[in-house]
Length: 127
Image (cartoon, rainbow, N blue to C red; front, side):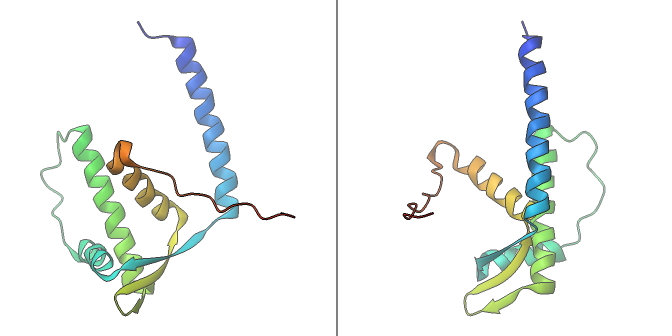
């Protein structure tokens, strides 16, 4: 049996998360990232690919999510192709925080229980 009170609390907390997102959005717009050439090129290739719009009826939730992730990759590829700065075996590009966040969340989901948050630098005295 579903505990409706618990899900009401989850809905309220989802609104809190959205409120936090509103403040993050106001403070963070773009993040500069360095990507290996092969990864950056794969994103550009995704942007340049011309997928047909047919055959998407009846897709599963998993297929819908995969298509969404592929779309995120293609949009990152667009930004790389228009604004990326190629340096040797890397590309430097400013990504919108939502694109960077989508990539990070996908990495975390793919890593599963092997994911470990990046260690925070030790606080220096006087900070």
